[in-house]
Length: 341
Ligand SMILES: [Zn+2]
Image (tube, rainbow, N blue to C red; front, side):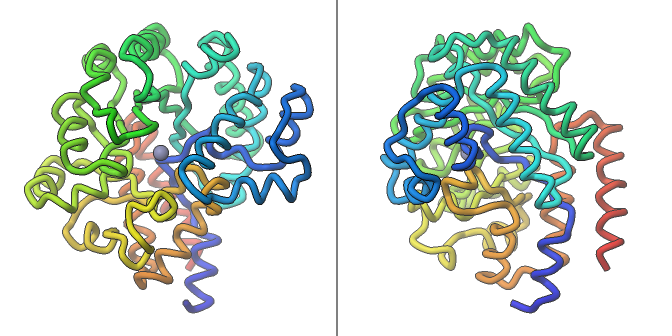
């Protein structure tokens, strides 16, 4: 890949719509939280934690994820990971992010109230806006393996906090064996509200999961959605209905959705005319970043500047800011883009 494109990828302004806050805690922050909260880790030095983080299989991925959740003990810890996350976004020139967060886990495990969690994230957001000049919104998601009652609790919290920086209800976790239909009640609660529906679907399970997400949960954007490629009628539906896909290439390779990046369906989805965005999902756990995702897909598929611009403008068009905020973000983005060239 030529140096000019590499330079553009590093310097260009970026928008990210699919990244998990808990899955973005880097090894240094985890070590800091574990020491502060006296939580034993399976390894002790920073180098060992980095090695433990490196994706080997799904079980190891879940172990790391659970340990991160365990190390977040207080609302102040949440504010810290929020700030660290935003610093890392800023380093990559990510000017706007919609990040996913799973509040019920921290309520059940540590009893941190939803209002305390939300206030901590909001403090981090305001700090990011004033100190770093970047903005974000929150997607509160349901762990799909939890019973439907847990999902309804999350939906109720959203409804009680309509005047907040939350934009959507999400659905994440183990997709196979846990179809979207399980959480119909939670999504039904928010459908008439200002909140949007963004379930993960079509990653570890195929088109049936996507259909469930669209038909039952009224998905407006899809977390992943890549396996829609297995069903031409579904592809047509997604195009006709302007459903945007949040594609996370390295995550899909680590979780063996495709054997290698060169076999990923990303270029086919783009060529078919689907609305596609590029995202990092759980960056330190998949040894990536949004910048790395752009570098890797450019190397594998020959994407260039026009593609980068399209991916980011698609992300702006399909983000859930209010219309006037979205217009302002597009102007800011284009001003920064023009200065690159
Ligand atoms: Zn995800």
